Length: 524
Image (cartoon, rainbow, N blue to C red; front, top):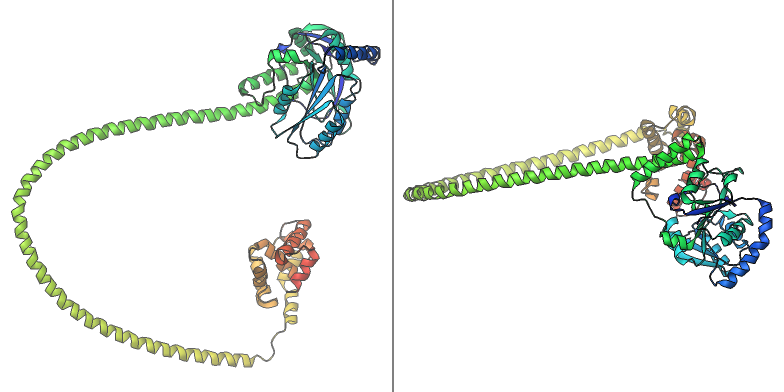
């Protein structure tokens, strides 16, 4: 039997993906969420709790709470569970490998409340955490609560009172979503009032609730009887094995909700359908590629078979041809033996004559080679002498040129010339971006006129410096404002400032500000 009670719970703004098949439900009883009704049954609930705890040593209610990185909401959730006024209860916390303070918060609550049991495991997902909780429960009824949800005070006691009175297989309740902007709402319509406090079979319950769009798929909206779950062998699947079935299911559910004009539920089911549709398309594409590959492999095998058959025929023909050729070759070889001996005698005579001729030619070649080497040595000595005379003449001319320059241009005058140049005006105001040709012109002014070998010194301090970082160094040396640097290098001013701090650390090995970097560059 399934008891459905319209008890209200508060939830965060997230949606749920775990659901049970409605066709596994047997009988159901639907109650109403009325405060007057709760006031009447409170005393009865406490009396029934005392009688229940006297008759059994196991807890009546087991609450399973999977935990993963919810330090913001966990304390509020656990406080709402501890305040449930049911004497016989246990709270099972499954820390699913949290990396924040969720584990510490759970340890604190477990050490101060005997009804809390805490289990730790590596991160395996929501389904694995809930299955771990199912393996540890001892209560007659099981409730699943997400760690970012909380229970309104007094609502679980209503479910408890009805559960003791009717012993249903499932108790059903509504949920309320609290969104970050302060608004509230529901993902599904609430249970109709005319169905409250009504005993139904599972199929009847599903049919009636689907007519009103009031069948929530979230497991946190239900209270399950443990014996019924064990009998049905229900557990949480870690992933679906048939995405085609899931795609079709979500499609028809979305069309059903669209026909009922329940747009919120239609959007939820349509999103799931589109996600599974994309997955099936990719899977179909992979299966098609696999079939094509199999066909291609089959053709390759057939080609290899045909090749080996032809190769076997060829070798057979070759073998018979070889035998016939061998016999013919032996006959011809006997005839040729005598002629070869005669030819060898003649070749030996020709070889001796050739050796005599080569000996005569080698002596003549050696004499010509020695004469050529002597001639090259004389030319080399003459060329070296001419080169020395040319170097001496160039040195004298350079000295005369230096003597004629009586008034060299100072660095201050060079810098004044640079300040009046088109290059400086472009850097200060005109150019919208520093291209490669303009950058080469900047390097020429800096390295060869204003600050000799500036870029070479920077590369000596930071050998792996990038071209853009080198541009920042050069523009800083020329005292170009940060805002203009950002425009020229197509970056933000904040990115330029961060780059200056980073370059200062790379060049000096110390932490510093952007102003420290400017001081360092200007000191070069």
